[in-house]
Amino acid sequence: MVNYSELVQRQREFFLQGKTKDLSFRQAALNKLLSLIKNHEQDIMDSLKKDLNKSEFDSYLTEIGIILEEIRFTLKNLHKWSRPRRVKTTLTGIGSKSYIYSEPYGVTLIISPWNYPFQLAIAPLIGAIAAGNCVILKPSELTPHTSKLLSKLITDHFQEEFITVIEGGIETSNALLNEKTDYIFFTGSVPVGKIVMEAAAKHLTPVTLELGGKSPCIIHKDANLKLAAKRVAWGKFTNAGQTCIAPDYLMVHSEIKDEFLPLLKDAITELYGSNPLANKEFTKIISERHFNRLTSFLENGKNYSGGKFNPDTLVIEPTILDDISWDDSVMQDEIFGPILPVLEYEELSSLINQVNHRPKPLSLYIFSESVEVQKEILDRISFGGGCINDTVYHFSSPYLPFGGVGDSGIGAYHGKGSFDVFSHEKGILKQTTKFDLPFRYPNTKNALKKIKMFIK
Image (cartoon, rainbow, N blue to C red; front, side, top):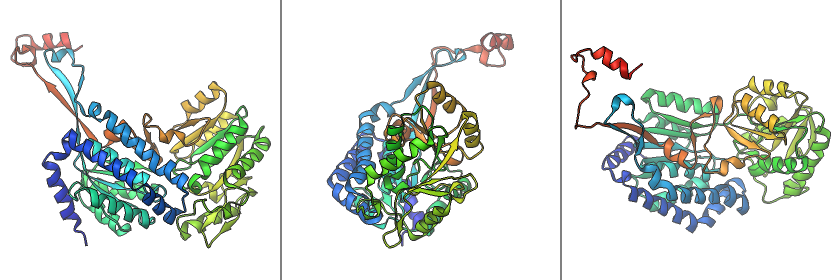
């Protein structure tokens, strides 16, 4: 059994040696990570197939390819990011120079989820390495094959004092949270996020919480309906809807609802076939508990499309539920499955009011050709991030910060954001010794008058 206190202490001692702060060390570690992922692509895809029945296409697109691009982007920019940045100095500091130094926190704890078990473990790891930290990585016990592979890859290629993977269940997570680490990065549900934040508060440990929530997708009356249908179907039903940024529900303008829903049904058939239960590459639901929770929602509203399921394979076909109200059980919490409820609206102001009276979503999607409509929604609704005339795609850009707000999370990462999340910005003023401004001292004649000349 791993002694977590000893592990944290060993990592802290290794960190204090200063090796991880060396730019060449960080670059070498990232290059090693890049190589081992490329060399084990098939192993990763095989593990994802066993855990979630993911196709090789989905595994590469959403788990492997996005990570390879993130590492390359980080390597390309790391030298620039890690340099001290000179900033302006105030008039009262004449003769001095001001700099911001990015320094690593130390021993960091990353707790990753099961829905994208490879990508969401490695993405924050990239940022932690780039910033110069040591890492304890706790992957999800619900995807045992991927977690075991992560453990083997990291153990075989990195020293334990630098990066360690700890497998286990809830008890393991709780035990790690009881230790005093220097930063915690958690991806998962809102209820567990609250537990993580409570544990972090006992040690005053800073946190990033990547959570979820009910992300709305708005189909306005002037949208390109056919294209919107295809992009909604792809964003919602990829990974069987087990995506924190998937459209959680549709809000469709009443004037085009009857035209849009058949297009959405056709798009689902085009992407996943006429019988998704027989599609051997359609992702399964992670567990029987989640499967039962999801199938209970099928009693809500009216089944417009789909609705079939197989308890033996834990597969639920892409489903559209019509005639849904906010009081239905499917609208109470994040769905996290291949079920898409549809609400309708007539006035934009009413739609905005309905969304704003609920917890702030992680993502929001707007399908509209009107710049005025787009602007009004962006200006009046607070949410983590999103797309105009697309779904999910913002997640893939290293130039865009990704994170939630309010109930959907704290902090953002991806690209430079990942480096920044795992770095403390240390402000330094370098003062001149060639002269000394006398008005700063209280024994200077007319000191108050002189200082008021500078500070008004």
